[in-house]
Image 1 (tube, helix red, strand yellow):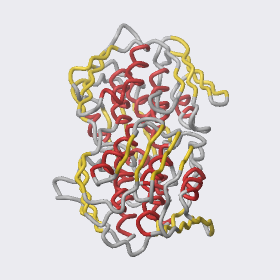
Image 2: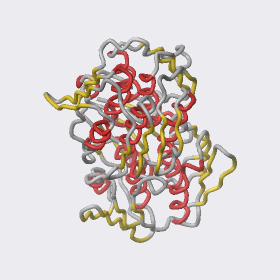
Image 3: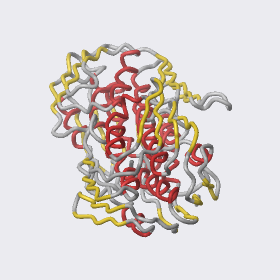
Length: 434
């Protein structure tokens, strides 16, 4: 099982480049189900979840071209034949985004059988909002033997109001609506850039969508969609993680190939915490030291608020800030799995329900720690970058789900980080989530 060995103490200096957004690429790959024509996606990150999605589509009968050996950052998908519209548990058990194929499968083939999402280290992600929406659009859904089976001769447009904001629910039902008869109005939608990325691809395929990126989306269903070529947005969470890496190490780091507009909440909070930030161009952000790091509170919210996927990384930064930071997690009920590992490294953190109190600055010391999920793993890497001595991070396969060549990128700007083991060695990972 792979491990990271990290020796702390080096400021990160230079330029680091961001890969495409995994959380945009996954629904965009699922959107290929909606047409018989080829869909070509560019700027695809080479991470484990993308490999899982490719296997999933191939298992249904799709032809998935991974691109040339020297250019695996684009993929061409042909779903002309969907011989087996089933998302098998054996394939999707390690990837929570499996529910994203439910809507497009029903819309395109009239039938879908999708393995139910399992348990999650950071809290439940109920699929009931997907089910309610599809049923309002005319689908019949039954659950048995760990699978959801949905059928509809043809989906009908409907007025859908989400009980709570859901990114995957918005994406799944948006894909279902583009081939439904009539108009679908979706209210209380997620506004994340990943939703607008998917809507832009669907529009390029011939869908008629208004309001993506707002809380209300209107879709006029069409009879069919055609092929398209589309470039995936940069990963805002990877970009935010690298910004904190520069800040926590006191470095001078430029994060390139990103979208500063998608990082506004993160940038604002880092500036409040005493970090100096410049935006030298339309696709880059520079972070460099201020006088000192200062405590600042965060409360995770849906976009455009502070993202839950950056909470763990920010907590690592807060351990080095002067004062008391309150970190409130509003999205997931169990997203403090990294706290006990940070405490083992010397952090002063107390948890009360959904709020963590971080007192800093703490002198972190190297330790052997365990990664529990994707973003918790990133927080431990960040802490290890400033810890005294050599830390060993176990179960870093979590990192491989969502960060492309993470250790190589950090090493290129001065981090002392090495991987022990093979990058994609055979293993049986646990069901996890972002």
